[in-house]
Length: 189
Image 1 (cartoon, rainbow, N blue to C red):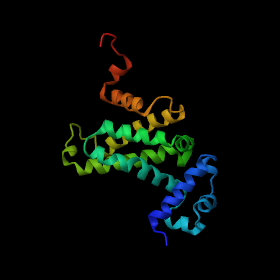
Image 2 (cartoon, rainbow, N blue to C red):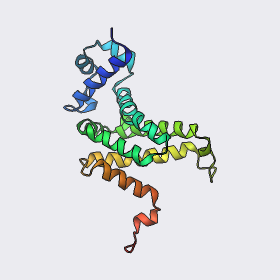
Image 3 (tube, rainbow, N blue to C red):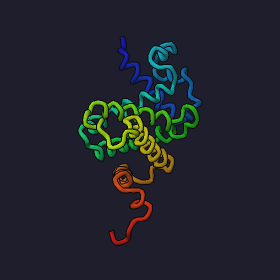
Image 4 (cartoon, rainbow, N blue to C red):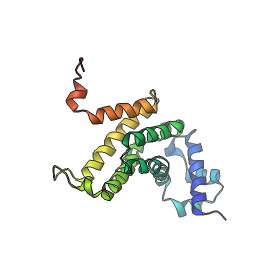
C-alpha cells in the first residue's frame, strides 16, 4: 500500500509530465490520475484541484529547499537555489507561467512565497521591531513576494535567457540599491 507522500509524488510527476505537452488549464484530473496509476477519487483525497497541486509543487520543490537558507539569512544563496531549481524544470515552469487569471501561476507562487516569508519573520523576534509602524510583516512579505514573483515570471516568459546565477545577481543588485541608483546609475561608480 502506498503512503500519502508516495501518492503525492506520483500525482506531481504525472502532472508535470502532462504539462510539458499540454496547457495546464486543459489538463484534466482523470489524465493526472491515469498517469499516476491511481483512481480519480484518490486525487481528491490529496488535493482540491490541479491548482492546489501546483501550489504543493511550488511550496515543496521550490520554497522548502530554500527555507533553511533564508532562516540562516543566506538570502543570495536562497535566491540562487530557487532560480536554479526553476531552471532545472524549465519546460514545466514555462507552461506554468502561462497560467493567467484567478489561478495564475504568479498569484499562486506569490501567496506561497508570502506565506514562507511571514513564517520566517514570525520566528525572528528581532524582525518585529521596525522603524515604521505601517511597515508590518504582512506588507514586507507581500512586497518581496510580489517583486520576486514578478522578476521570476518575466525571466521564465523571456525563455530564461540569462542564467539563474545572473538573475540572482541582478535581483540582489536591484533590491540592495535605491530606486534612484538603479534608474540613474552614475557612470563613474
